[in-house]
Length: 203
Image 1 (tube, rainbow, N blue to C red):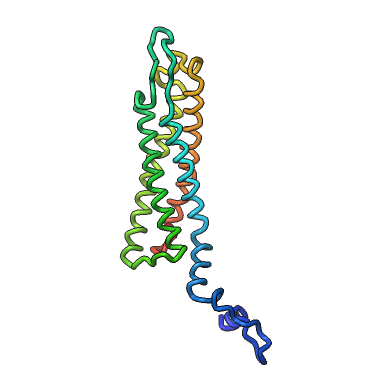
Image 2 (image 1 turned 90 degrees about the vertical axis):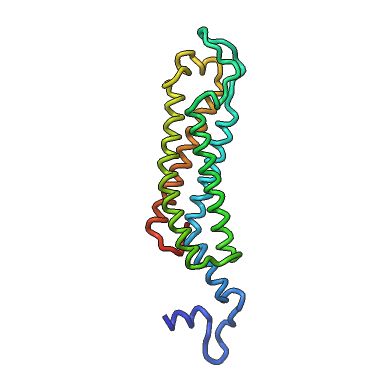
């Protein structure tokens, strides 16, 4: 360890070594490199979850139809709020988005050195991250599967041949299903990382 440390600092006899650059070898800079190396991948997972949940949330919130009557059933003005499944999907993705945004902000501030968490705050964050990830993994998977079932015909959408007259709505259902599943796929590794990591993070 001592020999490697000397080589890193570039020390040598007779002044022949590379002079030490304080900005690159300071304790703060070293902590930054360790933090980014350790937490870079978890942060990527959080950012991808954030982006996908935001996309799914936006797609569900914008669904709607201006068409009139199909097979004797009036579907004019139907929006996401007329379907409990879509309300569930909207709520799940909104919660996941808010949670991911919070975790991203906390991690980025830590890596930037904006604050140094205390022992108690590390324990609290570790506990919250594990249990919230655990709960949201099931919540998000259920939401994505429910939306897929809605598009698959387990509702009056198939009875009235909704997609033949409201293709935009159906395309948004498909896209929101895909983004919801992808958000879940990026959330699952975050849960695994938090289970195996210590209280120092990454979260």
